[in-house]
Amino acid sequence: MFARLPLVRIQNNWLGSIVGRNFNVKSSTNLGFPCTYTEEETQKILETINENDVEQLYKYNITKYRLKRIEGWRKKFGRFMSLDQVLELDGFGITVLRKFYDSIVHTPATSEELVQKVAKKDIKFTTPVFSANLIPKVQSCVSLYVGLDFVTWAKFKVVKDQPTVLAGWNSFQIVDRKLHVSELIRNVTQLNQLIPEADVYVVENPAVAQTVAMGSAVQTNINVQRSQLIAMIMLSLSSRPVEDPEIAGSNVFFFKQYASARLFGIFVGNERVSADSVVRSLMERQVGPSEEPDIEQTQSKLTIPSGLKVVYEENDNAEREFLGQAVLLGLSFLRLSVFKCENSLKVFRR
Image 1 (cartoon, one colour):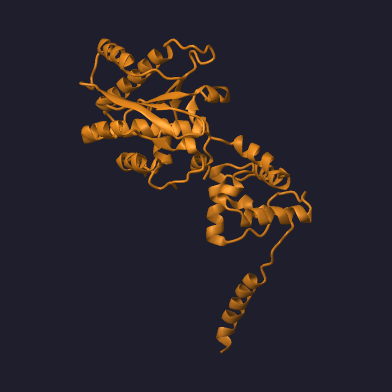
Image 2: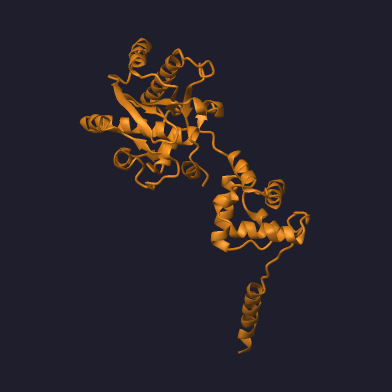
């Protein structure tokens, strides 16, 4: 009996440390964090970081990486009990934490100010940045998808307060993956004659031209050729004459890589999967398979004429896939950069 007494005492002390854990509303100086907030401000900060979800916290002065650390802590340990406890997380120093806490304490009073604050954190989807001055000028758009064997494009017509219309789509086959520069020029010249005119042109930002594995010279050459082809096509399109001088020379954009795949849920792991199911959903419902038919913004819907549906079905699987990628790229660009569709932007703020 006497031999077990120390064990009982240790257990009681251990239990007491848990039961006695109080909600500390005061910051401490144990980790070097100065106690500069009032009790009311401290309470507000603790309630905010404990009660708000990640999307709500993102409107404050904090990065997504650090938000994930906070979320991971809460899932594992529960609530934060003091202000300095956050310093235990990776990526948090005193300066970073002070800026985060200050942004919580000085939250904008009106919802309009909150919207403006969140807007500043919008992801830049294009290179160069798509200017807000161009938005009212966009009545048509051509998106291009450049693959290894095909170049495909889709043209969209934009009308205010109406669904976007797919005005046409087509493809051009590249016979050889190893082309001399002179052959590239010939192909680009033909493409320039086939690609329809539009107010703006968009292509996905090409992958970095680098080897995947040691000695993979073939893959490097393919990446380099694809980058050359994209650059030459976009140069020829930017050189087309336009009526509006504000658009001239600034109507060609490179869209963020994989953004269209992420928006429509066809990005699994580190790879893009088939776009066919999304395209068929657009044909039938005007929206993607996981989207509500009464989507917030009418322009975000896509009308595909019956004749173009027939064209899609008549192509083989590979060509259909490239046509689909071109459509999703163009629609993503319009939703994210032109229409500023809130439902679509939320996908990238998580």
